[in-house]
Structures are given as structure tokens and as C-alpha cells.
Image (cartoon, rainbow, N blue to C red):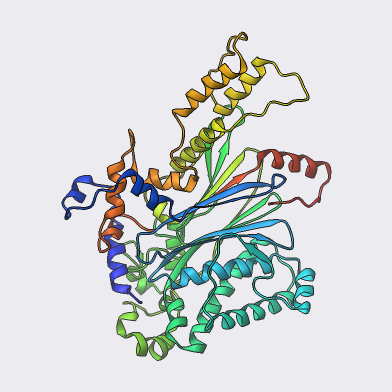
Length: 500
């Protein structure tokens, strides 16, 4: 259950294996060659899509997950807020086992849904009797906690909401920070109070998280660790895509984060706190849930942890804990009609692609899907062929479009644009799958099937040297509705608007 040595070693090696080498892979024992059909089965196995009503800020979201670890250590959760119009979703990347990531992915959204509810409303529901699932409706969560630990988690949640109703309402960013820290503390308290392998397993494994909270036009992204969130923005004039990063990764590439950690420990530890690009030479993310072998005091480690798990559970140079925190950085963004989609993903995707590449691929994917959708001509007004052709060209984002001959029929014009669009038809109907396919098989000349096949057939004992678990959620925004709400809010300041 606790594969500290193996995980740390494989992670250290993988840190220096950044590029795909086909020749290196061919040196391995003969790998089975997957057919395109088999590749599609693997890539699409965990797809999920959810469509929202047309009068909401979110049109839909698409998600997918491809494991490298066995079991996969990534988790994902998405939910609508049931007592007001809002949406929550998160991507969680576990390490040292899947336990922490699985637990946090379920519980964190429940804590946030309660924390961001107006205190008076929360107080009313507490008085009437509520549970941890009273404030949200999950869309892709078919598994519940085992009966042995579910009541314990419920007790922790009830204590949390009672604390909330006795504290003043804070802004959303502060509530998100408090929810992260409170849940992380609960993981510790539960492990020390129950002192069994299951709760210790959650506390000693770890997980990084990237959580999205959307209510009205206000988008908040809370991130701890090295998952990533990027916003795809389209210029209305040029139709070109640009990237807005909505989080900062907590790893050794972030020098501000490195300086923060070094400042929290004595000067004599300056050479051991960060070694080989890792916390205490072992942990890549510099903030995370769980991972209490980097947080607990020396007394707790000696009294509670080492008797069960042995001396190897104590990391070297462990003198002045805590070395790690679950405190997230929170970024706020007000949506505009130019904001088309948001991608959140575990580092398994960002190991292969830059934010600009991701936004470009999703943007092209959206354009390709739009040109293949049927165009509806208004029945109650006169529309010329030139106007129809202009709309078709706009859907395709053709840069130098000239009006076709007006003698052509509508069906002829439509067929011309369709034939042009078919050259860009996406292989996948799910944008997250489209990203995974390009991450594993993308080249300067297109998708290379053999490259994807190699990645998918690598033996379990070496696959983590070449790729990590990949989890992606893409949220597509309803630009027309955002524009309407933006106009309404300017005309009526303070008006509440619907998120989903």
C-alpha cells in the first residue's frame, strides 16, 4: 500500500525523461501492436460528457481519464450546486497510492458547497437536518465510501458546518482556502483518532488538487500542487486563440514557492529541504493534501507511524516539520463572451503539452465540430444566399473569405463548406480524448498511431518512466448567455445570474 521507495525512485527518473524516444522503446521486449480500433477502445473507456440547459453559462463539459498507474491515482469530480445556480469540478492527482486522491475528490466539493452557501441558508438547513451531500448534485460519481468509514467522514463534515454557521461569511477565495485546510486537518485527525491502516493510508498517501468554483460570472480556481488550469480566449475580430493561465504550479520550477519553503526552516537545512528538484529529495509537488509524513511532528511519527509502517516511512533529514501544506492559491476571473472554454488537467497532460498547445487543439476541435453541425435558417425572416454563406464562413473561421456566386443554391454552398470542413473533422467526439490522443501520438506531421500504441502497451513496471496518469475536464461556456448576463448586470447592478 505504501510504495514510498518505488514511487520516489520512478518519479525521480521520470523527472529527467521528458521526451518520447521511439528507438528507446524498441529496445524493450517486443510490445503488442494495437489496432486503431483497440486504441480507440482504450482511449475512450473513461469518457464522460454532460450537457446543461441552454439558458446557463455552461453549455457542457467533457472529461476523460487514462491511467498509467495500477490502480490509477488520478480522480475527478463534477457537481452542480443545488441551492443556487453554480458549478464545481476538480481534478485530483494522487501519489503514494490512490487513497488520498479518491477521498479528497469526493469530500472537498462537499466542504466547498457548504462553505460558499450564505450563512443564514446554511443555518436553516443545519437546523432541519442535512448531510454532506445535501448541497450538491454530482454528475459522474457512482461510487460511495465503504460503510466502515462513511459515518466517520459524516461526523467530520457536521463539525465543519457547525463551525461555519458560527463564523462570519467570508469572500469565496477565503472560503475555498479554509475548506482546503479544514479537510486536510480532518484527514490527520481521523487517522490519529482511529489509528488503523485505512485512515493512515489516506493520511500518508497524498494528492494535489485543482478545483473550479463558478457562480454567476465569477470563476474561482483554487489549486494546490502541480495540476493546471487554462482558459481559452478567442478574439472576436481575428478569431485567434489566446491563453490565460488560472493557477500557479507548486513545484521547484516556481522559485517563489521554493523561497517560501526555505524561509520556513533553519539555515542549516537549506541544502536538504529541496534536493534534486524535490521536497526533502522525494516529493515533487511542494503543496498537497495528506502526505502527513512530511507534516506530522517527530513525536507523532515515532509514536504512531513508525511502529506500523517501519523506519522507511520517515523521510531522511526530517528535523523541523511541517514541510508541506495543503493551502491553495486562488485566482478569480470574471467571465466575458470571449472566454470559450476552461481546461483543468493533471500533470500527466502538461508533461506532454504546453498551455498554448492545449488551447490551440481545443480551439481547432471546437471549430471542427461547429462546421459539421447543421445550420438552421430562420423561418420568419428573409435571408439571402450571401448572408447564409457568410454565416457558414464565420462558423469555419475562414480568414480570407469571399462571397460565393449568388447563383449557387444554398445546398451547393453548404456542400462546399462541408467538404472543406471534413478535412478537419475530429476523430473523437470528446475534447478530452482529443487532447489525450494528441498528447500521446502528436507529431509535426499529425497523429502517429504506432506512437500511441507503444505508450498504451508499455509494461506496468516501466510505463511510469514514460507517462503519468492523465485526467482532463473541459468546460465549454455559453458565450451568448454570458453576453446577455453581462448586459443585464450592467443595466441592473447586483442582479444574481445563473451559472449552469
